Amino acid sequence: MDFLQLWQNGIKNVVATSGTSLTENHAKLIRRYTGEVTLCYDSDSAGIKAAERGGQILFQNNLEVKVLILPAGEDPDSFVRSHGPSEFHSLVETAQSFYDFKLEYLLKTIGSDTVSRQSKVVSELLESLAAHPDMIKVNFFVNKIARKFGLQEQALMAELQKKRRIYRTRQQRLQERQTKETAEPGTSMFLTGAWSAEKDVIVLLLNHFEKMKDVIFEVLRDEEFSNENLRSVFCYIRDHQDQSAKDLTHLVLVETTDEQIVSMLTADLFKEIENPAQYLNDCIYRIKIAYVQSQINTLREQLKEAKTDTEEYKILIKEINSRLAQKQKLQKVFSQD
Image 1 (tube, rainbow, N blue to C red):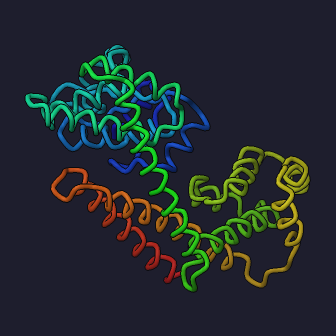
Image 2 (cartoon, rainbow, N blue to C red):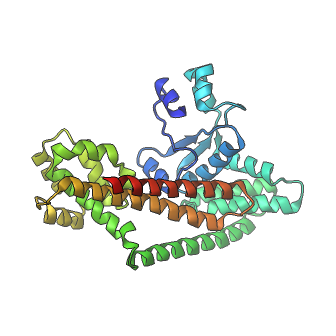
Image 3 (cartoon, one colour):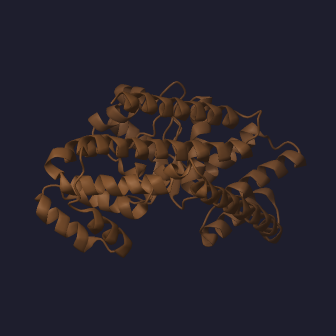
């Protein structure tokens, strides 16, 4: 309702994140359209925690992030209905930078009345910076931390470098684990198998454009494509669907710069498939299952790093259970088709 209320009142540069489940994939998708994001969740404790977690994901993907905290008891839907879109626009102008929001959040949840607690706040802020790719911006934030707590920048940078090494090692291990899963029997569907299904959906789309375009564009979202090049082709076809099937096929082959993708598509174009509708159904299932599984894997990695007695841990457990339920629902729905 929050998204719809804003849209109906003329505030259309908005997206909904399905509760609190903002992910790395969302961040990468958003970066294709804008470099600035203002988060606006409910003003309760769960909403504030979601803003902190979601803001961190956007922040470490080099987006300029602000956080808008609504008055107590309000959400975007109720606020716009009560005060109107003009007041909401004015409120957006007061949004905090993610750094200021994070600092305020940490001071409130950890405290600053002892050196130990101040040290913990600083450590959490540096942890937040460890994943940020832009070192110029990182240096700017380190300077702010040093001035806020009266610390030496050199000492902070030394500690930050330790945390960045730990972060890189963690990411490398995650990548190695995913690569290993690709090679293991029974798990390749979630990576290479998904790419194969994505390629086949595009081939089916080009071969049976008029018959299949409506169902494909209704059921599949571009963020569900794990292969970036195939995702780009999918988006190109969707954005040029006013072309004839023949012209569209030609444009795709001409405009696609990845020679490997072109080679795969041309190898299968016009290939006869006994039951195209059923085959499409199978491909959609494989893509959607792979997408949900990738989200589960990411959440499980985050769970390993979360502390068990925190609100973040509870939110991650809830998100994992939600994705597992979604996976079971997909398996049930597609097994009936």
